Image 1 (cartoon, rainbow, N blue to C red):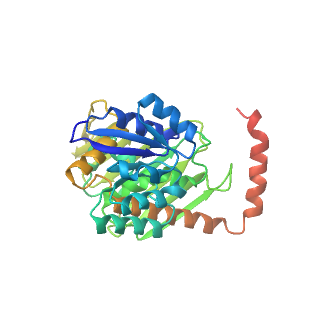
Image 2 (cartoon, rainbow, N blue to C red):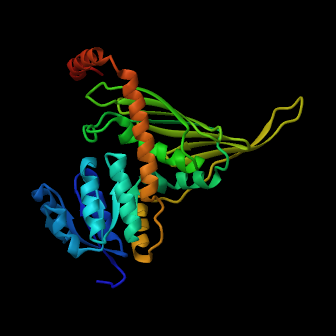
Image 3 (cartoon, rainbow, N blue to C red):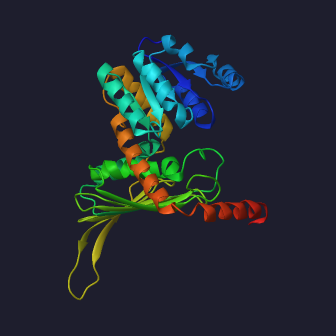
Length: 336
């Protein structure tokens, strides 16, 4: 092993954790030591493919590694990350950072106290088009975001604000540079007990307003953001990794206005690989990660506030919602 390699384990090797392990195994700056999953058979199957060790308890690998990526269900993030941090190990925790703000505060404080890396897996920050957007936005006045996707069985243990919208809330907070002064939101649960479609309006002290919609009930996959600022309009397609920048409007009476429309091109990249490289480099050099624990905590606070507003609006409608869900469940097999 190269002495500069960071020894790391992946905790939780379900759908996303499997990708963590595969990409870490290929990173020259990292040595994947082990994979851990409560389903030991699943851990062993992946470990066999990657040539590493398998365990069913994260505590068994703490003394074997310098760092860990936590890709378990959200409800387990706090305890797993806490165990590693208390032992002096750096942690990359998938989003949302924890289930509650109190848990997030504890992890952030623990990492600061021990001078450890605590990174949160907000993957869209490593989308090259998003990276360019962050560089270009200076004074956002209005943002509109739509993130809609077909239904998937995984992640239904949380509402869509914590599942999908939190990606956009994290980016909005990074662009505006302040926390919202007011949040209004509406949404409904359709296929389960948690809201599956949510719309939120965020108002910031600077005057910026963001209108955000997230749904996991769509027939298509669409992820787009539009940003208006005094000197430009920027339109981002997350999925296609495309950015349109309209700026330098020239207007003369009696003539059509002239504008500069720029469509930057980006080299092919793998955002998850970039995120993991960023984490390993932060561990190796002791620099701050791109998405800190504090960033993850702010995004969680915003998502939880959205969820609270949604369920405040649904108070008293439980009977109607239950009937709606029964009708949807009955009709699903025959729907086109």
